[in-house]
Image 1 (cartoon, rainbow, N blue to C red):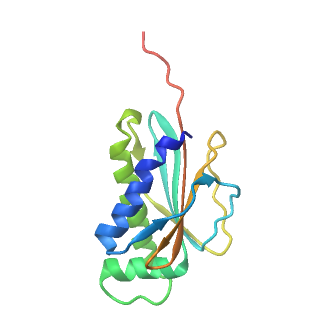
Image 2 (cartoon, helix red, strand yellow; image 1 turned 90 degrees about the vertical axis):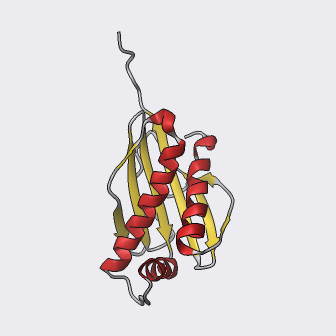
Length: 158
């Protein structure tokens, strides 16, 4: 994955948290992901396909997941439940959808979001893709964004 491909995802995280959740985000250092094990117990996962293939993972602390769901649903939520799962899936969908719009040259399609929960869960990116990892600190707490995608081999039409 090329570093310039991460920028649309970074902007999408900032925009989603700022406009949809009225929450400021502060980006940490961009680096290659060193582990398949996620830092936090809630991950929204979106697959990418088209002229590139890969995945986007928004990995949230429980505190952030609860605050995201509470803000989106305009009610206090105190435990991980189906509403939180749905809200994290929608957040992942918003981030992937906005970034997709900025990466038109790849004619990307985004999958339906999947949400994985549990301490120390792992996410396997496609073998050709080493994901870029970006930690964020937000007014809600910490989260991590991982993006890995590579241009697909496309045969030339005769």
